[in-house]
Image 1 (cartoon, rainbow, N blue to C red):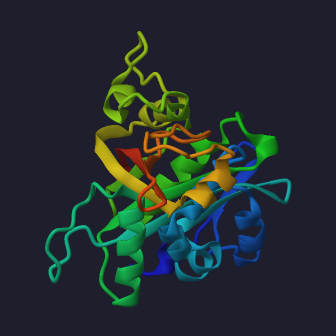
Image 2 (cartoon, rainbow, N blue to C red):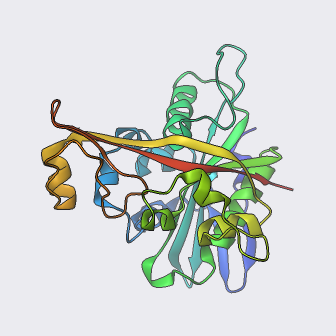
Image 3 (cartoon, one colour):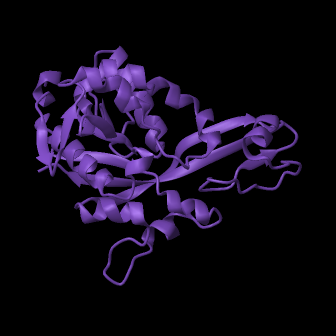
Length: 266
């Protein structure tokens, strides 16, 4: 289906409008100027896969899959999706919910775009809310709009590798144990997982290696201010799991898990 299929304005939410960049290309610069997350750890810039889906490429390649929340003429949030082929006829071994999570989907999306391959799945890879507008429910509305956009393209599902920031408070807890915790009402204990569940999303699995950062120890020291002087795993600020350290090779490796959600679009 063509990009034009989702160029229409997504319905109004209160005094705010949700629109794709395909409809309002002049919003691209302001939309992508919104920081992803004010508290995102500096070391996450070391994930090389993220370079494949830089903001300029996203705006140019998939403008119909980027939703922008506009309030009073100001861009206050964005939501970004990419398409990929989970079950292509010419490639074996792909999956709708790969173990490689965010990184794997980004690679497949770029590969499919370069090869002009028909895609069959839409994946949400980012929601960013302006720091001054956080905790106001904008992320929920943007997620709703992303589901609507995927539905307009003919998909009955939006897949999401969810990064629960609260997990950084418990880097030594397994992601499976963390994601399984619930409140008395049955909803997830983690606030961001709870947002997805409240909207009807379902946990379908864990992506154990969703984002990977590997760098020399000197760079890890610069990112974190920690010594990295033993071979023991190191918990770092903002990290959801410890960094694995090798003094022999002078390398630290961070392998971040995410939680796979399936969202209905109908």
